[in-house]
Image (cartoon, rainbow, N blue to C red; front, side, top):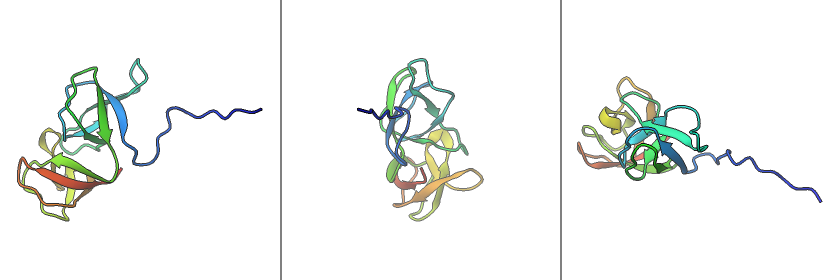
Length: 126
């Protein structure tokens, strides 16, 4: 009888995953990969800075060393930095919030508009 081994580090495209915070992370903000896997084998994530390539959106707050759920596919809810119009291209803005794309990496587009500090729904390009 043969057994099939599955690589435990493979993820489905756009799948939500768990990462380990390498810095304090705030809910509904973009996160980025911050290095190789942690000593515990988790993906290392930290807050994304303005213009960064985003890995996903933090589903909840996490202190350094804590696990955090990262939403990666479909439509994600992100705090807005500045007003965002529905349909506008979105990038990582100040403090890891979503902002209308200017000079950074486009990470998705706004499904709903949002005022500064409100929650925008963004179709994320995972």
